[in-house]
Image (tube, rainbow, N blue to C red; front, side):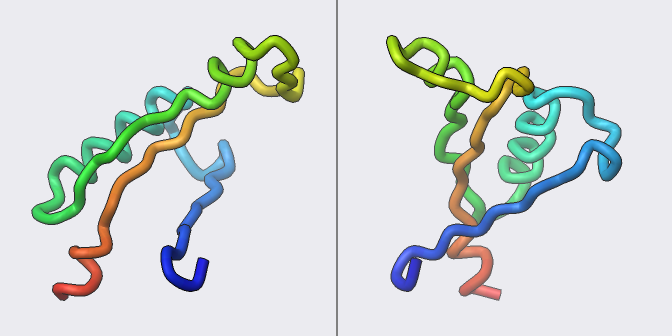
Length: 79
């Protein structure tokens, strides 16, 4: 974390009109794609990966879990 910090944001359902993980990912990706220096890296389907493992365990209350990875370091340091 000292050399390569990780930033996360938790959004409660009450804070958005988006209805699914795919909608949230698409919203964020559109913002990243529109930014002049931010770069989209990948979307990781954590739910599918975990549930496909032989001993993969996922909280039964979860219906989806995805991570979007993007770089905005240049955008922050060049301002």
